Figure 1 (spheres, rainbow, N blue to C red):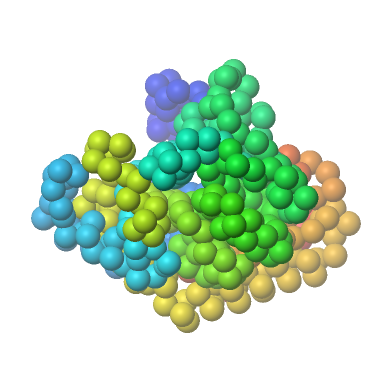
Figure 2: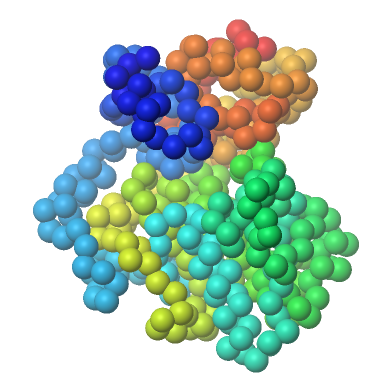
Length: 389
């Protein structure tokens, strides 16, 4: 173990299963350890560094902003925050934006908006949430309460009351669950942490139809799927369905803490002064970088390349014809390789070959490489995987 790992082992909380590796620098799709060992990053910090590590244009913007202004509090306006809010509304269906620091915070805000909106519109009986089994929305109490994986609840119950879970893509359960007491339905277009399971188009379309008819807000958690990861700026575009509330984070500022909740004016008006806040939310450093991130990622040619790279990677994995592989699924560069058996040894084999991946489930390896990866790196990954399967 190196010095950094030893220090971390001594002083950091033990809530993460960390590899005994310490990274000190990153460039593009590569990370480098304190010993100078190079790794190919197929995690992007779990779908965060979509433009890779230390992207020159982002570094330049960050340096410029760092010499201007770091923080004022949200009692005042700042140019980067106003510019980013404008950019997000131009690129989505939204009209107003609330900024926080993390995905879980964005979900917490969305849940509060839904209940407050029902309250503001005299729907006192509307307090329940409907969420999907196998979902993941975060680890704070509200976000955890709508996360449909009981393993994350252990030791933290009782959670927030008034949540109903239904199986993904179950149209009958969807219709039966959206009753007069429901204020919002929350879902991920692709269940990323659950193992990369895209929702079916007819299910999402039916969800939108029912929510509109029954005056229920539709919340899309696009924390992992957003900012170009699926080949669209946001995954809702694949479905032709606009949510009422959109949660974004992770890749929004390419590694700086930032999240956004996006909605129409009518819905966001539920947040009156004093109803919600975030001290560091939308700080000038993160917002300045995020404006540049959106400028680069929203380019049509860039997104088309993400789609093509994802297609090539998926096809090459499927073409391996390994009996160990059950399927490769996903959209764009959010992919999962599901195996017929536990994948720990394959994960460890890739790590030995200096390739970083994640294991959201025991038999699933998730691939979320930087969107800037090249085709040689795709070939290198597939060739390395071939030796293990």
